[in-house]
Image (cartoon, rainbow, N blue to C red; front, side, top):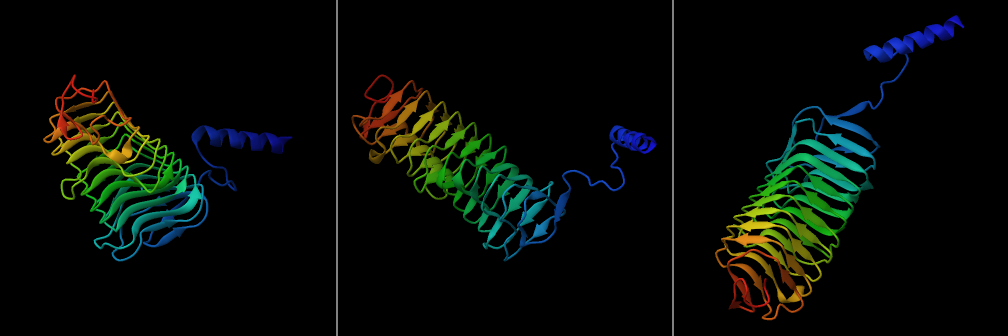
Length: 306
C-alpha cells in the first residue's frame, strides 16, 4: 500500500510541475533533421534544427505516412536548379509547417493524400513553387513567390484546397490547374502580379472540371482568371488592374459559370467570352465596365455577359 501511495504521489507532483518521472518517456518526442538528402521513412514528428544549404542535391525526402515536419523557422535553400527542396512521395497525412524553402527546381513536391503545407514561404524555385498531385491535399497561410514557371501547380489532383495564401510575382501562373484535375478549390488568396514575364496570369484552369475559384483578390496580373476547360466555376472574386483581360472563357470551356465577381480596370477588357452567344456559359451578377463576346464589345446591360 505504501508503495502504491508513493507512486501515486510522485506521478501527481510530476504532472503538476510538468516533469516526467524517471523511467518514463516524454510524449511526442521529435527527431532532428540535420542534413540535405535526409529521408524521413518512418511516421513521427521531425524538427529541422538549422538552416540547410543543399546546392546540387535534394533537400528533405518524406516517404512515410503520418509525418509532421516542422521547419521551425529555418530555411532549406539551393542556388542551383536541381532537385526539390522537400519531396513527399506517396503516403498520406503529412504536414509541413513553419519555415522557408528557397531555390531548387521545385520548392515542394507533394504527391500524397490528405496532406498539408501550412505557414511556409516558398520562393525562387526555377519551375514550380509547390507542385501538387493526389487527393485531398491543402496549402494554406503560405507565401509562394518568384517561381520561374508557376507558383502552385495542381496536376492529376482532386479535392485540393488552396486557401489564404499570398501567391505573387510568379513568372507564368499564380495557380495552375491542369492534367485532368477535378473538384479543387482556390479560395481567399491574394494573387498579385503573376504572368507578366510569360504571358499568363493569376489563375488558369487548363483542364479538369468541377473546380471552384472563389473569393480571391487578384491585382495587376497579366490576365486575372482564365478558363480553358468546361464545367468550372468562378465566383466572388475581385480582379483589378489586369494588364490584359480580367476574366476570360475560351470556346472549349463552354458550360462554365462566372458569377458575382468584381472586375475593373483591365487594359484589354474586364470580361470576355470567345463565343458571341456565350455558348452555354453563365455570366451573372458581375460588376464590370468592359466586356467582349465573340470579339464584339458589349458592357453592362449588353449581350450575354452580365
